[in-house]
Length: 408
Image 1 (cartoon, rainbow, N blue to C red):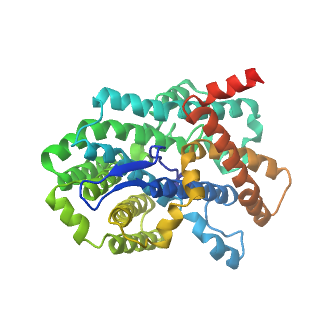
Image 2: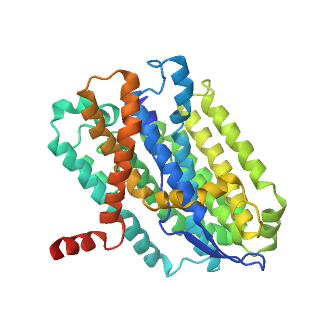
């Protein structure tokens, strides 16, 4: 369905995490693979949405059997959501573990840092999306494909104000308007406050296991009691965020219990096994759609959290050989892709919508439309996202560009 298809991703802090471990064997390590994982997941989300523009219901019925199987790997965009929310919890917890369980600078400073990181690029992307709606005639929206047709109507007071305040995920009539993937920014923004005001105090007083259990319990309440109103907001991501927190604690806490967990558990094998189960659930059509999303997310979240522990363990334990996947995640290109993945997430859907509009005038066959979106629109999304990153995400980027233009 259109709603099920608009899946997005969450981001983690743009700076590469640098950790000084608490054990003698843990030297200062730059966890570049976190940015690499973020970059590959971002690219996959763009590929997924490009495929969905050509095939909104993700059925593949308009393609040959061979092409259906060849492109089936592009239809699992939901997994990227779990990857990014766990990464977010992991990276935000790392400095807390290093500082003995406290937020650096206190709550007010934490909110200031998060606001400076999240809000300027978000509001710039929101403004760009609204500008495109203002410039493109409404009569063309159905021709533009799945995303823009679904995002209309736009210009209502409630819709715009809810997006500006990052509250649009709380109401079904707002959540996917303007720029569909922005709903997950709102969900993550709200999780930031729960993290600081609830999850951290729970962790300090009751421990890690109880904190993760409470996070899942709170996150699942809307799923069972307000499914029609809040289902799409996926508040069970709070539990996935707590799993990311748990991964950071297990990797870097000096407490003996966590040191034992870190060293004794086969994290890599557990993570890969859970990921296979998550994929099997994704392919099983017998699960109701709303239930399937929750189960897939939770399984994938547990899998990613385990893999983060395993991969960080490889890097901090001084192993001479690391896995080929971890080598890929630490490669220069993939890490560089992760640097502007938040911008890529924020603007890729409007860019795909504009590309789909241009392609629609060519009256291409479904296969050629898919090829054009993947081969032309996706690289254009990457190019535009990098420019957006330079202007709105990098600190002082817009000021730098204006200064150069004035100097030229």
